[in-house]
Amino acid sequence: MTTPRWRGTLIYTGTLATIGTVAFTRFGPLAGTDQVAPVTAAPVASSSSPVSPSTGSAASSANATPSPSDTATPAPGSTTSSTVTVAGSVSQTRYGPVQVSVTFTGSTIVDVRTLQSPSAERESVQIAARSTPTLAKEVLAAQSATIDTVSGATYTSEGYRESVQSAIDQVG
Amino acid sequence: MSTLTERRTRQTARGTVTATTAHGRWPQARLAVHAVVLGGAAAVLVFWWAGTPASAGSTPGGALTSAGELAGLLAAYLVCLQLLLIGRVPFFERAVGMDRLVGWHRSLGTTVVLLVLTHVGLMIVGGGLLDHEALWPEALSLIARQPKLLSAVVGTGIFLVVGLSSARLARRVLSYEVWFVIHLSVYVAIFLTFGHQIAAGTHFVDAPVARAVWIGLYVATASALLTWRVLIPLVAGRQMMLRVEQVVPEGAGMVSVWLRGSGLERLEARGGQFVLVRFLTMGHLWTAHPYSLSMIPTSDRLRVTVAALGDHSAATARLRPGTRVLVEGPFGRFTAEQAWSARTLLVAGGAGIGPIRSLAEDLVRRGHDVVVVHRAHTSEGLALSRELSGSLSLRYVALPGRRADLGYDPLDPHNLLRLVPDIADRDVFVCGPEGLISTVVRSVRALGVPRSAIHHEELSLS
Image (cartoon, rainbow over all chains, first blue to last red; front, side, top):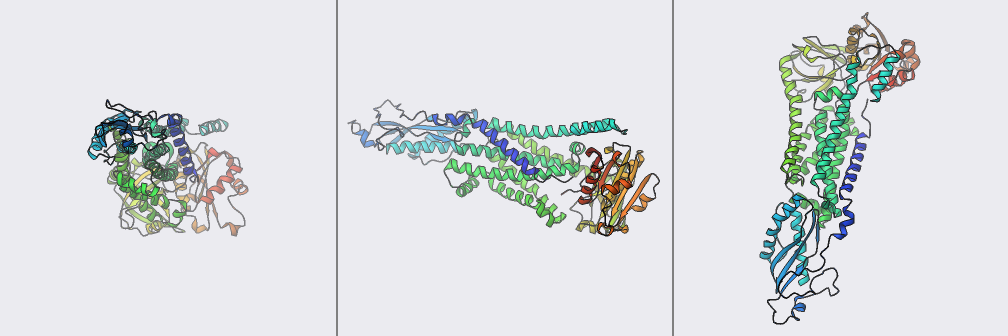
């Protein structure tokens, strides 16, 4: 008996169908919630200092060029000490969304907080818990989004960078 | 299961011999093999599911990358399975038989190569989407970023070469020896690609248990190969101390090689089986060839009969007496146990007479009524005919002559029925060239022999 000619290819086709089905079942429910994920499009103003509510909201704001001078003018007397917290955009990584808020005093970054990090799985939570403090320190040190990737947290680092950059961009 | 029921009904319909229990095991054992294979694949799926958060698929890039990981995991699992199938593992050999195992190994080879390509493609496309990069820069950055990926790329290249060299088209051009050496390099490929699975696989990086299980799978496979393909043959070789005793030309380019050793009864070889023979001399050392036993081995002698077809087989005729020999096996289910009827018909063509000769010996010993039909182009091509024609316990029918000269096919239904009037009540064993096998199968089917009573085995390892 000779080996059936297309058996290997048929098994491959079957395997491919299985992979597709399994992946779809795993990820299918997410297709609907995908768009819901960026919950915090609104600016998060968590600082105690004078806050300019107009800064932020990358998506909705019609005045797409909010500059620090803009926000600083209506708050006289605090030209250098005006503290602003801006939420960065939600960055989708393969393990879930990453979003940070960046607090500026003047044009200096004084604080970075993690608003969202991958949390669907225990492992992802651990990776995020381990990497985000390091990433925050790096941002503070660099005063920019140009930071090194934390090993073992490639995707989280990538998302973190994106979100920080968008916050910086909003402030100008 | 259908073959089992078919056989049972056959048995009640006609008076048959041999033990039922020994045969009832086959389908069950084969079911067990299926369960092991599919169970393993299911375990891989579950493993992937557990290690892949649903959020991984929240972007198209993430979903593609995860699917690519699954393709890679399945390919890695199937590679282990492939090795086990041809690893002379007794469980598989008994349940499935080497000819089928080789067939499955070959089919799965196609599947593995395609899955590896799918894995590579999905990882690059998915990664490119995630990183917003074009495919080529993404591929390069993956190699730069991921540990052990460069060696995996080299390994993948070897996989492709091995796969292509095993394609039907290539096999027609390549000799067995060249193909075999290329095929051996697959072990290097497996070694090179294993590193990135453990070091870069997202399912293993932070999961010690998963890593242990995966390494365990590969270690177990390697140990099985070492045990049954290296250690046992070497130990058996030491004990049997086989040497070439003499090489006897049998006419029409066929030679019989007589081997002498001791304790050969431990092989428990049956007629119709084959052994893997490795002559320990220059030019033969690196390849083992499947040669059929042309008689049932005695305690100190074993004989294989070989047609001088490939380079190696031709060189066999020049073997010197005294050459050391390693023998693996015996293998094959082309044996007397397959016969359900008390009456049997054996059809041999060309080199097929070797296994038919030893099978006939076995069947006669077991008390079957045996008819041997022997086809050859010329009467000189009727190798071993002296041994068969002289026997009183079987009927030997020689059918020499080319079809073109004869003006008819001696194996067509009309002629077969004339030669063997009770053919419909016989188990039919066929061994020979592919064309002869299909002719005989067609003829005897037309004469009412049920499918389950026709036995043939492809003698090829490649």
